[in-house]
Image 1 (cartoon, rainbow, N blue to C red):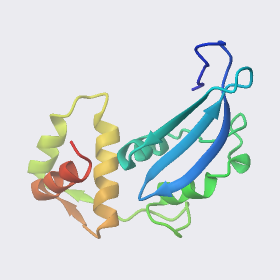
Image 2 (image 1 turned 180 degrees about the vertical axis):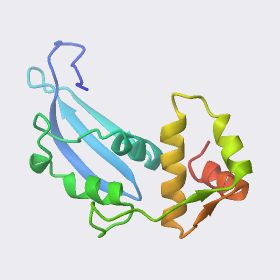
Image 3 (image 1 turned 90 degrees about the vertical axis):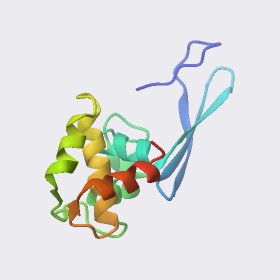
Image 4 (image 1 turned 180 degrees about the horizontal axis):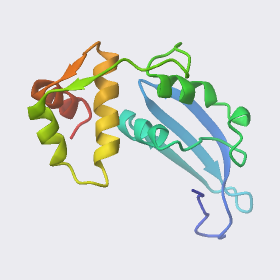
Length: 143
């Protein structure tokens, strides 16, 4: 994904990335031609969605090592700050009623929703997702 300056039709350059604050991410881009700036702020769910899709944040063509934010991305993928990215995530089970509710989520969003809900459960030490957990996660994510 690239951001283009509407005025100049030039690709914008990444100029700043703020570390996440409780999962929120702040990124600033600038047009090299006219110096117009835009900022993007993601909420925790959006940040989780981006990382669950394998999107690499930061400069470079796929070189995560150049990204000043790569450590946070690896921690989020692992599920907890300070946990190695290759550590196996805690096993999560789903109650049948919760799975039925999950199936009512549109197909194109369901994998992201499932990943976000499971991450929410892991962060709280919840081993089984039931309807109450779904309700709490829904409130947490502002849905």
